[in-house]
Image (cartoon, rainbow, N blue to C red; front, side, top):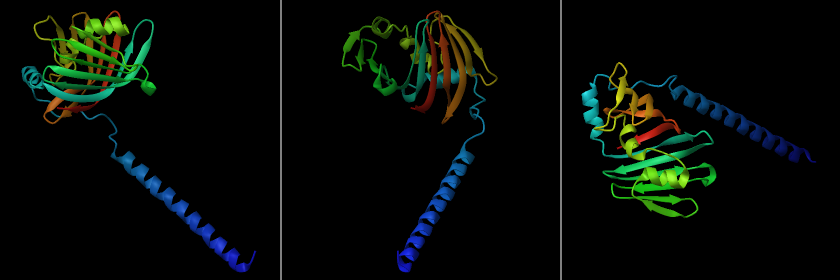
Length: 216
């Protein structure tokens, strides 16, 4: 190897070495910045002065929404979890669940008259009620009709219920229709506090819901 080629090779080596050092510095800076921007603990809801009556009025007025998050279901025999999305427009809803790698994914579309279940393998089944359809096809007694209210932090109207609240009049515990619903966290969306973590249970099924995004 000539002296000239050796010098050129050495310069190229130093440039590559400098490039990697710069990349390490930049990456470290970005990581530190992102870590610094993360809250050290969950932020409490901002709308803390509303009465329960005012919360009911506000939450009942939300008729359209788009939420995303995670859902996990457990029975005595098996357990299953998925990403999920619930889109609601007035009385029409579409609930989509996406299992790992597309397994056990399905979409439930319904209104007060009927409901359609579409599975990952292309099956389409209709019924009058979502609860009977899910029980028959998937073995889950998921109370979709009640969740329309429970997901917003509301009891189902005109049905007996036991309720507990926190110091800010957020619903924290609801017992209704054989279900126990625990509201573990709320998040402020504009001027409205909405549940972001819910645990539901009856004798046959446990359901954990995490909502990472609320839009309405």
